[in-house]
Length: 119
Image (cartoon, rainbow, N blue to C red; front, side, top):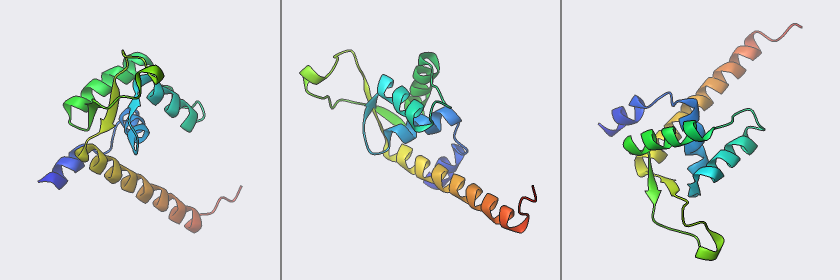
């Protein structure tokens, strides 16, 4: 039952994958997620606010992420910020997607050994 629910999310939408990967291991607020994705992808993926917050809304509705009540110290934070974290289901879905992507990369490497570039 849970396994079929996990599989129902795969493959993850690109923006969902990047948001969830940003939340792996730490809670983040929206702007922090945007900055991490931009840095991690060396500017190749840019999540604009409308895309980010629309995706966050849908990820919450899907029970893949949730808003966190944990807050940094008030002097280190803006009270208007909302922080997000992966749910247990979200972590399982992210792990399944990472495994799926690793299998694809392995298939590419295998294919390249069979048909090396002759260029």
